[in-house]
Length: 290
Image (tube, rainbow, N blue to C red; front, side, top):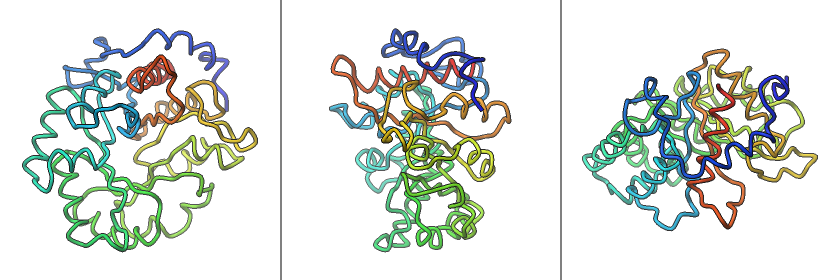
């Protein structure tokens, strides 16, 4: 399935988004967001960003990350766990303060990433803490890398806490990975499908994977990688082989409640920064969902 000819040319659109710069927000979208701050919900699809995208920015404090997110025009995020822990430590009251600070700026936190949840060295107490942090943030899911051993351990706890644990992929999965038992260990185990990494590793169409597992996919990671035959390089949106446009439109068409989170991995140009580049990606997604 290709919608490039009927909607817009992915390459030609780059000229339009280049002018976006570090857009603050889009007032015309406020009716579907909180009514304040940025809005990145387009056509019923919540576009967000994983805050790992701002790793090249010098200030990594919670306050700075919030300013970066707002500067990119994003209203919902996957927040890296280290940002939370540096701000709040072990205090759930401080976690709630962080949530309020972000909410007051119009930014929701739908996922928090704790990459070691369920690992052998992660105690049950630590896992419970992660779930409690997620709830204090208002997050509906925690993300980590795919691991069946972790799934066995956290599945029952995810059900107990009512918070999903969504598994992220790099290039290690294929079209039948989730046919296996990994999601069977708890009804709140889910998928954080990185479509760019999938395209770089496989020859089949990632859109079919989205359709197949849509009821277990909590979020997509959006990046535009070249395919396996083209060495899998990370490219600016519209220059790779990943069907970002088609994936977004598939979610929109079916009204699936799947978050679509930008993960900036292509090299940031010398005359730009991560805030501006994420803003370009947001505008690309907005146009795709128009």
